[in-house]
Length: 290
Figure (tube, rainbow, N blue to C red):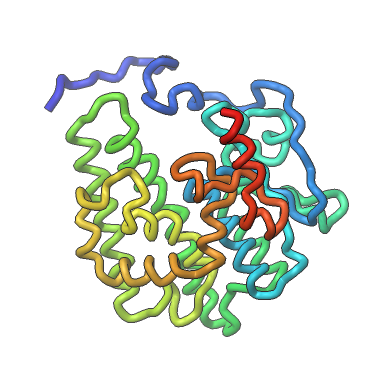
């Protein structure tokens, strides 16, 4: 154990004490600069980044389009959170919490702002009557797991992910604490998936679309380089489910959108039509000039 920390009587912000994301974390809200957001030609304008929360929404759009909902066409604009784009004035107008993803639905006048990833998933699912259980008796179970994800993932991301992968110093207590909770959550999912093809039953729903980018990608080794540390192979039902969803073409497309890190062939910084997946023109041009 390290030296015991004694909290001061009144906390003050140390701007240098935050690790990799110190420059984007602050104890106040609101815009830091004026910045106009671009607007494309489609009904839905998404401003995001391919973190797990962002992937939820791009997967949802791609699944809707794959299911034949042509009115779900969207423009996806890259928000570079490391550069502070989420603190621009137009973005804050859509999401006063300054977090991705943020959506403007131009099918209404004036456009409807939608923020928080689960809210966006629910907004789109209800709008297109898709990826929601058709049996109203099954809807509460789906909602149980959708909101389970919203309450649980901060322990995985802001808890385990931060202290294991991003904190400026490694401390045993927070890593142990959040590892225990992450493994408990994986066990919760593993038990649920032992008797169900998908999270809330036999139908693929927005609960799966919400949970997979976090827990599915975790067991597939794509988050925090922690698969071996967490012994993810032991969660056999979660692994089966994660691979099943990972094989869906719409999921493969969705996880590329607004991705600006990792392998270049998996990056599609902006998405304005399905043709962008074939050409990746904007990203190839950018890579050639950097």
